[in-house]
Amino acid sequence: MFGRRPFLGFMSSLPFAPGLRAATKKRDVIAELGVRTFINAAGTYTALTASLMPPEVMDAMRTASRQYVNLIDLQDAVGKRIATLLECESAMVTSGAACALTIGTAACLTGKDRARIQRLPDVTGMPGEVLVQKSHRYGYDHAVRACGVKLVEIETAEELEKAAGPQSAMMLFFNDAEPRGRINADEWARLGKKLNIPTFNDASADVPPVSNLKKYTKLGFDLVTFSGGKGICGPQSAGLLLGRKDLIEAARMNTSPNSDTISRGMKVNKEEMVGMLVALEAFMQRDHEAEGREWDKRVATIQKAAEKYKTVSCSVEVPPIANHTPHLKIKWDQGAIRIAPPDVLKALREGSPSIEACPMTNKEMLVFTVWMMQPGDAEVVARRVAEILKQASA
Ligand SMILES: *Cc1c(COP(=O)(O)O)cnc(C)c1O
Image (tube, rainbow, N blue to C red; front, side, top):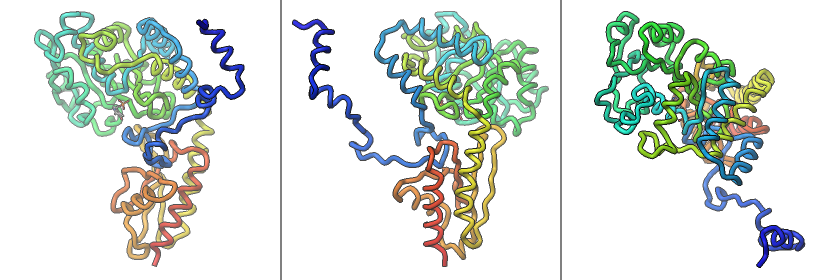
């Protein structure tokens, strides 16, 4: 019988060992399946697979995939590294930011009490309420409600203080909703300290700017989450939970690999942990100013092509908090250019190469973002937009 090494050595000495040749030829399963790929001029939408991981992230994940490791040891080490990088007390890799919302809430409910951990989503015997500003209610608070808590809506600081009590487990803040609420992030964190209730800021879609990664824990939030697969360009199924050491420890007790927990289904394996760390490092080392200039250039390329057509007007808007990146909005007189923006979106999707415009596109305007494009994509989008507008011009 061959030992492993001699056998492999023998195989690789054959010039045309068939198995090895097949292994070096890369399969493209998406192409084999005939599933459409496209230029992403939309943004970090989960349903559109959001972002692309840099090669160094995939390399790190591939290397990790060839080794066994104790998962708890790896989460310890990765968490420590991330906490050092982001200058916060503690950190962990979660199964997306939505998972972070669930296990962060669970941590506030259970602490390190095993009986409580097993009882969730039954909150009997625990503080079962989460305080939130009315204007901060959103779809993702389902991930908080999954823990069995009741969301108690308030609007002013006075109402908050009145509603707070021993039944209050947590104070949830939706970072993007800050301008719509009466209590800002800074005050929310301070009120949490004053009332001795843990505060959680969902800043999932809020990089860039890179400085936000450190901002909210420093502001005093006990927990903060960011998506791994949005602006950071890490694994799509990963996220970051940052904050107080005791709460991160309790959050870890509420999830995989622990079986009898609310979040056992939100598993994170070694590849995502390592990939998330490397993606974060790569993101922090990027030249963000140069990247911003590249985005402006891409926007200008598309804008210039569209503005050649009569009645077309463009504006560039950067949302203040979430998805803080240029959005190119294109409008025209639909009497002169006889096509509606949703039909342009459809034509772009059905063209070759296929292009996805921003789902914010409506009857009035066509919307693009450029931050998830690859080099050369902006020129292709510009050409296709010009072709479609030209064809529809009277
Ligand atoms: C995207 C998003 C989430 C969910 O993030 P995942 O990493 O996809 O789980 C949660 N909250 C907000 C505000 C988001 O934008």
